[in-house]
Amino acid sequence: MSITEQTEGTVSVDAGFRATYSPEEESPSRVAERAAEADAWPDDLGNWGAVEWELPGLGEKGPRCGEYYPESVCDSCGEPQFATHQCGRRGCPDCWGTWAKEASVRATVRIQAFRYTLPNNYERQTAHAVVSVPEGEVMNERQFYQGRKKAAEIAEEKGFRGFSVVPHPYRMTDEAKRMYRAADPEYGIWSWWRHDLEADRDLIKWSPHYHIIGVTTPDMDEGTDDDDWFYAFIRSFSRLDGIRDTDSHEDLYGGFRYLMSHTGWPPGTNRDGITWYGELANNMFVENASQEWQREKPSEGVLSALEREVESIAGVITDDNEDGEGAAVDNETDDMGECPCEDCDGLLIDVFDVRQYLRYNDPPPTVANRMIAAYEWRIGERQPPPGLKQPKSEEEARESFDSLL
Image (cartoon, rainbow, N blue to C red; front, side, top):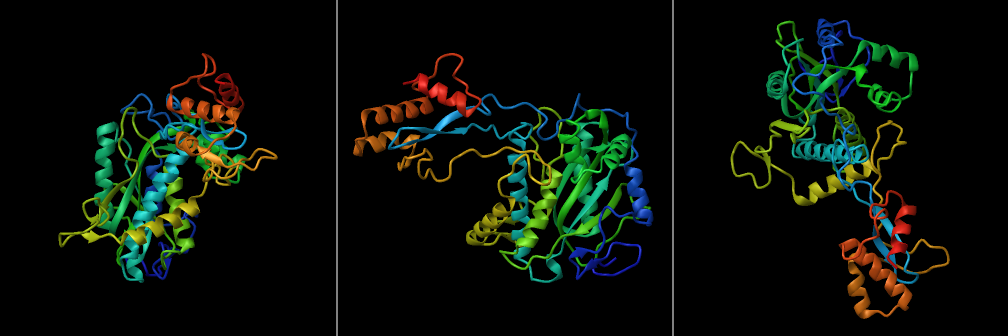
């Protein structure tokens, strides 16, 4: 079936770029019925291949995650400004949102860069599909990752040109879906489960499936009754008209950001949450392509511009974002800048620059002592007393700092 073809009862798109129906709408096709069958794994099947598969933000913090430390100090009043350590772990309750954001930005930039190298026509069309596993065929970690490879093979057979695969081990139980419909929140079911139900694992079930996001070909095959695994086209993404096409970046980034919020992995693994295949594989889409079969990335200037555009869309993620996804806040001060203390016109000095600053400047002794204390605490030469070594709030951090003076 041509992806640009308008056919009743099947997915149709506008100019080969955007689906004309919402993926939540019910479809009368047999393909949709088979996709529903993929969701029919028993609710009580449990976790297979691991005691409990991990999900973003539902693990443990890193050893120093959330601790406050002096990042800068005022050259006039000597007052320090604090930031927090971040472990960056995908399982960390505080850092997972930053991890998901960064992964989604990288994935979006990669696909948009690839599309940028293509003619501005149907060749840039990009889509989202899902490959679901029949009940009982993936029951352990080895099969789960073998399934990812099989899902990639299916995606190529259906017509994806270069694409990513994001694996998901779980789906919501029927009870969770009933509760979600009754609650009728203004955000998605996974955000609702994470925040409103405190990630109650009794409401998710083992049901492996693999999301495909990537660049398509003009003629895409749909799922059929003869398919071994269930394949369903979900939607097309906005077309890309250039580096600064905000709508296109936002649409694609939003797709990845949602998928990264509930990807999963067995305990102890460091496997990436996103893998690349086809013309977007790591050995195919490269800088300085030297082989005929490789595709060369755009220039560094184009890549940098794309990254800036996508990062500006991703923005700062917080717990009160409209999409309901939890995340960490980057507490670093912006470009050091001016001292925020009232009636102070001083400038903030990075603590690592304190020694250099004091070689050429002569602030009052009390200010110099405070600057040195902040510097030595940061590099570990001076430590607060027991009980104050690991401040978890700005108030505790200031108490720790005062103890050093």
